[in-house]
Amino acid sequence: MLFSASFIAAALALNAHAFTGKVARIMPLGASITNGVGSSHGNGYRDDLYNLLANDGNTVNMVGQQKTGDFHDPDNEGWPGYIISQVIDKCQISMPINRPNIVTILVGTNDMVGNVDVANAPARLGTLIDDVLDWPWLTTVIVSTLPPNANSAANPRIDAYNAAMAGVVQQRVNAGRSVILVDSHATVGLADLVDGTHPNDAAYERMGRVFYDGIVLAESKGWLWDVYGPAP
Image 1 (cartoon, rainbow, N blue to C red):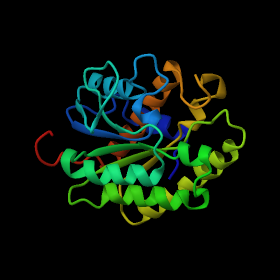
Image 2 (cartoon, rainbow, N blue to C red; image 1 turned 180 degrees about the vertical axis):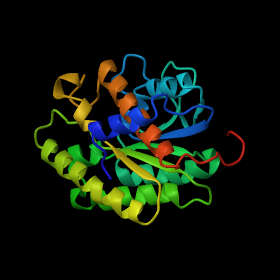
Image 3 (tube, rainbow, N blue to C red; image 1 turned 90 degrees about the vertical axis):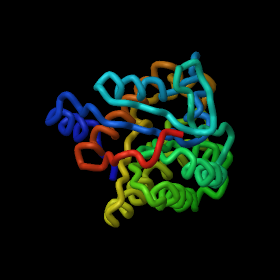
Image 4 (tube, one colour; image 1 turned 60 degrees about the horizontal axis):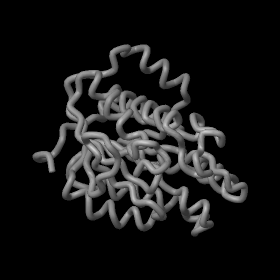
C-alpha cells in the first residue's frame, strides 16, 4: 500500500533512531533512473540510500550486474532504455546470483514514454515483484512511483500507472508478502529533471531518503529478513 509522508514520519517518530546492526543486501532494480543517469556522479539515489542506512550502524551491500557511478559500492540492476519485461529478464538472472534481502524497484518510465503496452504495465510490474518474492529466501520489495516527465503525452500515463501501483502492492500485502510502496513522484518536480526524464543530484538525494524511509518502515513491520548465503 502507499504510505504518505505523514504516515512514514509518524512511524519514524516511534523509532527515532531507525534501526541498527542489520545486514542490508540491496539490489536496486529498474532502468536508467536506477542506473543513475542524470546525476553528476552517476550514482543516482543509490549512494544516498547506502549512506543513510550505513550511518545508522547497518552493514550495507549493493548488489547487481551493473557497476555505475563513482561510489565505492556501484553494483546495481539499472538498465537504461529497458521496459518492464526486459527488466524482468535481468531480474531472473540476477536474483539467484545476488540473493538480496531488499530490492528497490523503480521501473516503467520507458514503457510510459514509449507508450508500450501501457494498459498491462501494472500487471507486468506485479510479475516483476512476484519474480523477486518467489525465490526460496525472504526478500522485501520497496517499489516506488515514477517521477514526472517533460513529455506531456507521457505524464497522464505515468499518473495512471502510479495510481494503479497501490492495488498491485495491496494485493501482495493481503497475501502476506513483504512489499512497501513509496512515492518518489511527490519528491521530484519537472524543474528537477536534467533532460526531461532523469533527476538532478538534489532530487536523487530526496529519492534516496524516500527509499530509506520505506526500508525503515518495512523493518518496523518485521520485514527485514536475514540475508541468504554469502555475499556475491
